[in-house]
Image (cartoon, rainbow, N blue to C red):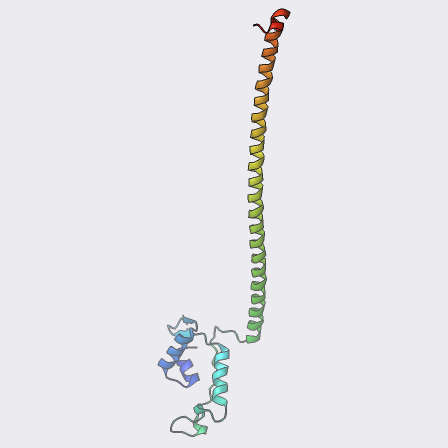
Length: 171
């Protein structure tokens, strides 16, 4: 509805209707005719109507008039606003349910990712430890190979000497 329609429906001045829409942060859109349209929630209009319809309410008696002179206002729906509020509420509830489900799925995915990161870190540490152990084993194998070659050289040298030189420890 336009600001003028809102002001008329609420029984306010145009400026008051504009300030109310601004304060409540109701969505605004410029129509093809150049007039601003405000998406006034139906609940807000119903609350205003209930307040105006309550017996003894201050708004029942306009200044300088009798209760019968008060204009009867009904919410004016904007052409772009769907009439079926129940369907919108059902859709909203369904989407909120979907969002809750997606939040749960996101939380589970984040936990799974955290677990996977921790497992990957542990696997990297185990791989580094295994690599270190392999390097140590290779170094020991190289040392043993060197000692074996040295022992073979000593044995070959000892075999090349005669029995008397070996007995006396001469070279």
